[in-house]
Image 1 (tube, rainbow, N blue to C red):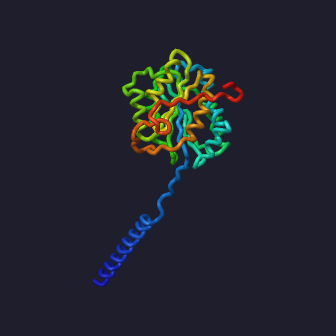
Image 2: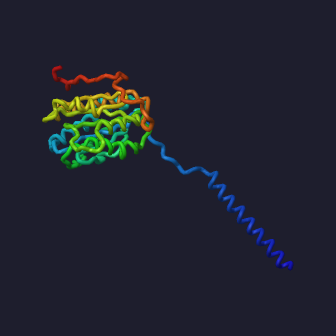
Image 3: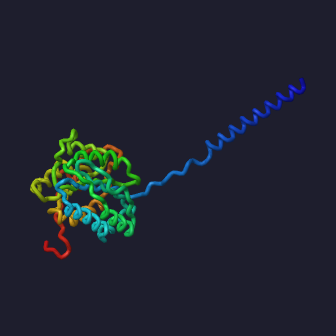
Length: 279
């Protein structure tokens, strides 16, 4: 009986020790440091460029757009606008679109001249996405669902910059204006850069004003053809990067489209000539 009693006592001691050990280990897990979390970069603007590459955009026009974006990023006035913001940085992504949309340049942070030059080099190397139709509504849906939903930064404002040379011709279930309103409803600003060349050039600026532009501080700045794209995108970058943050950041519902400076009326930028050109 004594041996049995001693065995029982020993077993109880072992069980108690195991319980205490388990509780102690559990305590270490519960009260120990949490897994390291990645800090999101702090930027002034999260900027998405949605670039039309439909059938009307031939190789020359495509290269004019990419080179215009790259040169704008290398421009001292654009770099100054980036570096002189409250946080001194932006994050940029490029989506090319036609029948379908695709991320041509993933999110990249620009907080120095070297960063801007590196992104510009990557822009020039973007391979072309082939397509025929101008599916603008589907492109905006893609931007909303796949790009804006995954911004890897803490941005003071979010802007989508849409450029193209034609109206939507895909007859999507959701209209361009309706898709615009969905995106604007989350506090994002959409600006338009219609390229006034071809059969729709005479009416495209008004189409972008009515159907594409929306949100706080939104505007339309037209390019007088593809050869003028570089000038237009550079001017547009400076305005977009320097603009005040939206009072309704991405993720909250905005009160509705508000034009530049909160004025609810059409707004058109004057064309700023290239250096040396006559005004």
